[in-house]
Amino acid sequence: MNPKHFALLDEARRSLPDGFKVEISGDTIVMTVSPSGIHQRNLLLVRRQFDRHTPAELLPSENTDLVSPAVGKSRNPDLTYLPGDALATSANQVPAELAAIAVELVSPSNPENDWVGKVRDYPLMGIPLYLLVDARQKTVTLFSRPDGAKYHRREDVEFGETLHIPEPFGFDLVTGGLLPY
Image (tube, rainbow, N blue to C red):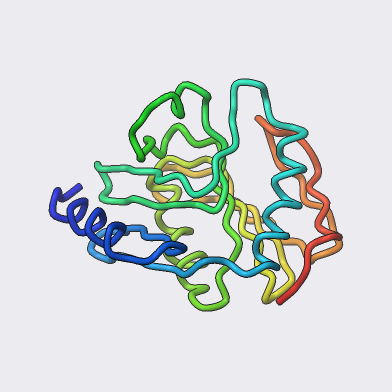
């Protein structure tokens, strides 16, 4: 990754007020504002289910910078699960390929970031599963089977249906309690 991009990313993080999230995708820096109550509630409902089915060697982490310098990407998912050793560091960045999943709740102010940019970036970064909760559309989508360039499988359900989450989690995600915007 271009060192200038990391310098810009660091400067943006220092300059923005609390509650902003900053990511980089190629030559684009993406900044988003703090999430709403519905966003936080939906994230917690999803996380609780994942926590009950997560292997002991994986830990949940919210808003962790996942970096892939070789492909020029730094993304910050709402939730990810990482090996415990990856979080035994004082660094604020973790290699993206260590993530077992990236979970995003679509921002109503910038849905393209989640639906286009991250669908493009996460398979390039080596993230095997991408779960996308869209409270605007009342849908949950799971992208899987990446080949290093794109995801080859997409499964969609509406709020109220269940969605199977594959190993290493291996459970059916219940979406009935999720709230729409």
